[in-house]
Amino acid sequence: MCGIVAGVAQRNVVPILIEGLKRLEYRGYDSAGLAVINGGEIFRKRELGKVKGLEALIAADPIEGRIGIAHTRWATHGKPSTRNAHPHVSKDRVAVVHNGIIENHDHLRAALQENGYVFTSETDTEVIVHKVAEELKAAGNLLDAVGKTVKSLRGAYALGVIDCEQPDVLVACRKGSPLVIGIGIGEYFIASDIAALLPVTQRFIFLEDGDVAELTINGVTIFDEAGRRVVRPVIESQLKADSVDKGKYRHYMLKEIYEQAWAVSETLEGRFIDNRLQDNAFGHNAADVFDQIKSVLILACGTSYHSGLVARYWFEKYARVPCAIEIASEFRYRNPVVAPDTLVVTISQSGETADTLAALQEAKKLGVKHSLVICNAPESSLVRESELVLMTRAGPEIGVASTKAFTTQLVALLMLIIVVGRRFDLSAEKEEHIVSQLFALPGNIEKVLKLDNAIELLSQRFADKHNALFLGRGTHYPIAMEGALKLKEISYIHAEAYPAGELKHGPLALIDAEMPVVTVAPNNNLLEKLKSNIQEVSARGGQLIVFMDEDLAESDAADENVQIVKMPSVANAISPVIYTIPLQLLSYHVAVLKGTDVDQPRNLAKSVTVE
Ligand code: AGP
Image (cartoon, rainbow, N blue to C red; front, side):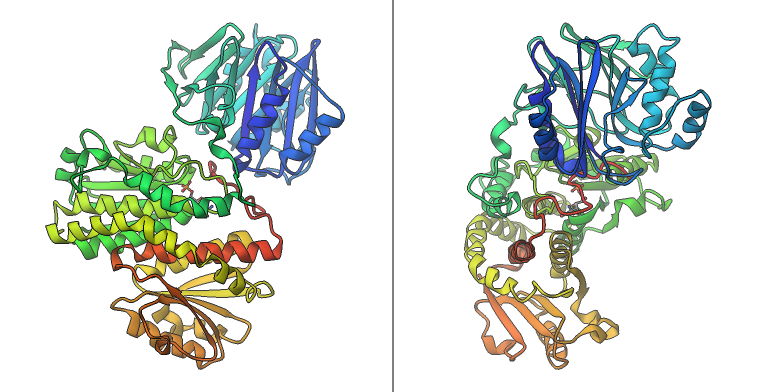
């Protein structure tokens, strides 16, 4: 993964690059670095850890320049360390930042070493910078040298390259990793994501796979993979620079949990006329597509996969639509059989998840004709590669642990079930019911957020624990999975989710007083079954925390080992959304108690753009 940002301007670019790196930290944050050209020389600073460390280093010993490249890293090849941090430099002349993975780096390294290049890092990236230096011997300019270099690379890359012998030129290129060009007035920038550049521009060019671009203060020239000069469209972004502020909250994650009522309203906004969901909310040709499809295949990763799991239950239950779901990283290598009249639905907060993107491409190769993405990033790769799009409009999600993206995905999926279901077995009454419940969601989310203090108290029970189990049944089994994922990723407590009926087939052996068991127990047709499962745990001394409907009598689950949290009473159609929220809050408070880095937990990155 990693984030890159670079620019050429008529002013010092260092503060712009530092701000850009902070906005890209969601892509990785184990080390950061920056290089500028000044007076014909390269000046480089690198620091282990987050961007603020690099910022402090530069504040203590400033560098400046009108052209520069910068990087925030998520280690793939070579552990996090200063010497593995980017930019990498060759012969004190060329500097490179890279996002992606070079698969043939071993082979290239051996050849370059034979030619006398000395490697100072364990990264795959270092072969690129030496190769550019090598190609510069014959090529007339940096653009040609980079163009030749990328022809020898196998794998994925987005690159920013500078050469102190051409101090006015920044060369950028991409293949398999995202890269945008930001257009200012007499200044041009590149970044992994538009968010990095919003403080300086809202005008962007999205480079296509294989493009190589040359940026100077006079403009941008782009060449496609075949070396032809091309013009790519300029897109005006609607996003604002201040949309990524923490506001009054201590962490982005908490802010994002609290934004969910608003995010759900935004996701519903303008898509209904007289309470009827419009097909064209999914794209102008959506009605034609929906008329043709016979089944649905959902592909996603992580939290987005969990929302898809809930949707599978809904597709079958409400509309009898055949629905399959698979983790994208498995699908892409499984050689699956997919009928051409399947609607492939990808779900992704970032729209840049490499496995999900590759799975979509694989599905297309297998002959699938129609695709739809549910996504939160308007200008992302998945949005650009999908036929139909439903944006979740949750606003930027900065916390690595996904919260509002998940609940808005569930809302978007219910909307999809309505429009597809109409063509199957969804009755007008059921549709009306789902729609009314969707509109009731924001109010119910506000109600459930009022449990925050009670959940904060409860979180103390977890702070000294090493393991936790999450139980659910039906649509709430994926909610238990999501709860377990949240807890493990930000509190580092090992957590697993089980469908409650599966306990007696093995996991019951784990139960003792040290094992908190979180149970999601809404008032539905599986409640009686779930109560028996609760008894099985309690009888073995397990410590249960049960989230259950306020309308149910406490005696339904009462026991000295059972702590009950009463949830607002809501209809089945929206209860997966509502029951997600206390689990998010629980993980958040446990993580705060444990003192972990809530927004940027160890070893992770927000957007997983490598395999
Ligand atoms: C969730 O908290 C995770 N950070 C992660 O599982 C995430 O959902 C997954 O990487 C998929 O990302 P996407 O939605 O951007 O595709």
